[in-house]
Amino acid sequence: MTATDTPPLLRLTGVGKRYGQRWVMRGVELQLRPGELVALLGESGAGKSTLLNMIAGLEPVDEGQIELASHPVHALDADGSAQLRCHALGFVFQAFHLIAHMSIAHNVAIPLLLTGVSQAAALKRARKMLEQVGLDGRQASLPSELSGGEQQRVALARALVHEPSLVLADEPTGNLDPATAARALGLLAEQARARRAALLMVTHSEHAAEVADRRLVLDSDGLHPA
Ligand SMILES: Nc1ncnc2c1ncn2[C@@H]1O[C@H](COP(=O)(O)OP(=O)(O)O)[C@@H](O)[C@H]1O
Ligand SMILES: [Mg+2]
Image (cartoon, rainbow, N blue to C red; front, side, top):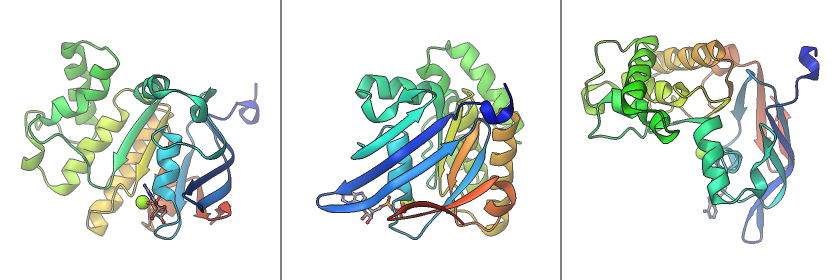
């Protein structure tokens, strides 16, 4: 099989979403190959977060289909959708969403614990993952003891530790100063590539152009090349 024969990891066909009578987007088409890095751009309110939430099975799809690793996300029940999220997806958010009273090693271990890995094995892998994002020696720290850039590195570690095939990142560097944001974006891309995880990230950072394989803009008619 050649690279072009590889089935897409993620396929969106004619996806639409509406709130009440108002369609936020229609006709969204996207194919993401394993390991591909795509930057998602679009004006505020265009529906970027809504689109990521639909791909994650967290928002109903009002028309069209979303297939992730050959699973029909648009048709899964709550259990099926939760299972798929646990195994196939990693998330990075603008506000990091770390659990305040847990050490950063425990925060990173969460996705592994959710898939049934033992606590000891999960913490071991979490510590190794923290080393890879440059936080060795900080495993016992609480999130509040870290800078914003360091907290986002914890969030990146947590998104990747269970080796998901797709990472969804929603303005992951929006709360960081430009230099820290650039480093975090570079690290996210490097770590995703190292694991052959595909990455779909909403970002306004100019550095997105440098790290992404493709840039797409979302508007009410769907996705277009930037
Ligand atoms: N739960 C909701 N109910 C009604 N409208 C919503 C809801 N969530 C999002 N919207 C609307 O959908 C549009 C897209 O929102 P969003 O996905 O957050 O945009 P973006 O992330 O691109 O800024 C906005 O107009 C927003 O007001
Ligand atoms: Mg948003």
